[in-house]
Length: 342
Image (cartoon, rainbow, N blue to C red; front, side):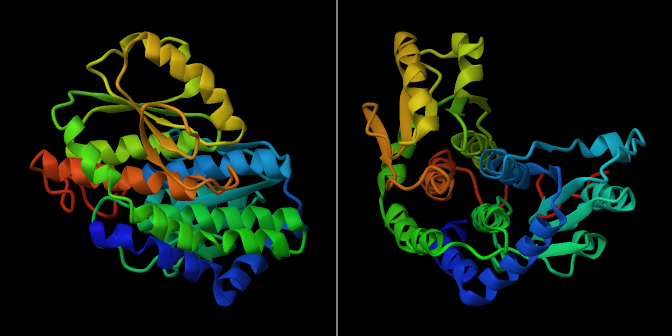
């Protein structure tokens, strides 16, 4: 897991290279030409959080309605929704889950434009879809996904911004901003704060993660990583949903990891933090916003890019906490790299 985490700056650089950027631009140009009226994402596990990030991007940057499909509606209940005007995107590290391939098969049969985003170009998901994007993350050693998650985020960002451009090609200003990501990721990973803070949560019985907008998928992915590697029950809420009831469960014995950036989503979290303070919750702030007494600081970037950096110290925290609790983060009990669901 440590090796996979360390490879992420190189993964960003690889995806941003001329070869891979051109391949994603080709796909984005086809999507732009087809002009879908809405976008449906389908994914499981970690990839579901990447898909949620892409749904935010789609609605904010493209102005198109977007949502996450429930594969079981098709595979278990036999639904056949009319997706003729949709772009349906399957996001999967392995591309091997039968239910995701079935969603794309049904969507394509109904006239949808289908796209597979995966780390396995030879997978059933790619064979089913009309278009595909290779996230080019390379072999991932650990069961818990880290570098494939961030590669999915970056590939989806490049795809959606390419669609927004119209011809698939990212504007020069966007390319220049994205070119800083490998260096900023390396800088973030060099900070040993996550390892120093891990013992603080060694005996926690449960934990809450929270964020708004682009940070909400980060909060969900952080919760999953903690559950996978440390077997620590972790509940993820958007900052808004947290105030609608779950706030009552927070107290000094329930640590809260709050993802707070410097953009609109982060600003909206400023009303959440004082409410957590009223509950005397143990709050760890992750992100570029200079708030909170305990922080894992991340370089400030455009809020769209923040999930590519904010998750890095949280991955490190999950790794360090698992080791502090005497667990093996490379081999979580009961889990396999590829989970086949129908």
